[in-house]
Amino acid sequence: MRDPRRLAAVVIAPLLLAGCGPSGAGSRTSASGTSLTWGVTTEPQCFDPHRSTQQNAFIIIRNYVDSLISKKPDGTFAPWLATRWKISKGGTVYTFRLRDDVTFSDGTRFDAKAAKANLDYVADPANAADAASLLVNYQRGTTPDPHTLRVELKKPDSSLLESFSSVKLGFLSPAALKKGDTLCDASPSLVGTGPFTIDGYTRGQSVRFRKNPRYDWPPGYSEHRGPAYLNTVTYRFLPEYSTRAGALSSGQVDAIEGVQPLDVPLFEDAKGFQYRTGPSRQTSFTLNVNYTRGPGADIRVRRALRDGADLDAVVKAVYRGTVSRAWSNIGPDNSDYDASLKGSWGNDPEKANRLLDEAGWTGRDSDGYRTKRGKRLTLEVGYPQPYVRDNRDVLIEALQAELRQNIGLDLDLKINTAGEFTDQKAHGTWTVYPNTLNPLDAGMELRQVLGSTEFLYGNVRGYDRKLDGMIHRALATTDLDKRRPLLARIQRRAVDRAYIVPLFAPHYQIAATDKVHGLGFETQLDSPANNYAIRVGR
Image (tube, rainbow, N blue to C red):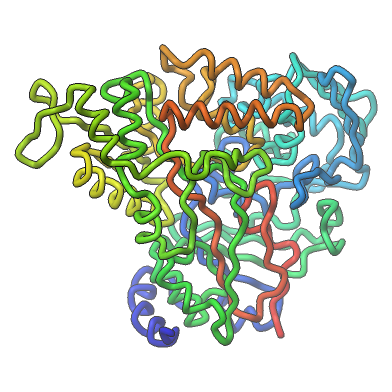
């Protein structure tokens, strides 16, 4: 086993140079049991729950934002800001009874009008909220009395309870909503009902939260009531793996997320530390292939990409057995995952080469890549820098090397900007987009990456209408047991036609000192839960 003190000695110099040296948020302060410091991989580009698109941002946002209902580990839903709800027979009217004792952190009351104001705000196209995709069937909200919210839909939507448990539809005070797009900044203007409030932010370094002393409305599955145990929580943005591990080993932070495989032995079963992994109900990390453009429009090329490498070996080499290879873009711990896909595709270079020969890619250039009419067989992978984490770029590079050797296909990884990807998406010109989605209902996930009106194919012409119809039927089926076979058919069609190439099933890895108690994962996010239940001390 590697000695954590030796690692700490190695990394402490660059940590200090980066301005992240020991401070009041370090282990000495934590010993009092009133503060906690995390080291996290990613700095949120936006702290507004309605506009943020980074999964890692929601780890942080959840500290000041509550949801209408909560999701339990068994997949069922529990009360939160709503104490109960009922769904009309036709599935188009949801009526929620709200708590009468909830206030925003600025002291204003959370009631039905405040909840309706949030839904109206998100659903309004003028506000360009990313969370609007969760309310595509929202018709209107009404408030029969101060503590009753009635939501009317244009048509049934089987994903709606999942959406209402999402942090992306968490509530901000009506006064905060008036700040509009300025809410992306981590400032006191971000007013929610959560157990903490934003207390300070230094761009590029950290964000700090302070306990909301009035908080007494945790989700229904919570094991305690009243305010959080901790007085303050600080998140330090430490993108380098070794820096995070060193900061934890040396006591400069109390907990980290994003533990690289090489560093797991430092904390797993190590004296003074704990190591935990979360579930994988979210979408798998997947290459989404634009099946309407360039070489990717040929199903033979897509299937060659899908089957031309030994993905098991590639994933194992990069992640050292800490994650599993994926078979679907739906996570293996999700109840709607189609387990029949396991073993059904992949690792058949001979067949992949035959398909490329049939497709006319029979030439070779000086670098060994296949060509047709003098043009190299290239599929560009555009990966926005803000979303690169967990060695996913390394995984693509490893796959790139094997595809070149096995079948002569150039999987050209381009790390681009979020703005460049937004432009490609707006014009439907993206080629291969690698992603996982923030956890959602499986039907909603499939619609977002494969549906004609959503995230990836909203501006693409020539999409698969049969697949699109299946997705819409699944979302209109309110009986979740009856729609499961349809969701399985969608997954199988997407893999069979190689619209997607699932790579691995990610999950969060967190490590902490053994003085940190109450660490857990939020089911709806698959991510570390907020800090409400955490205590620090012996």
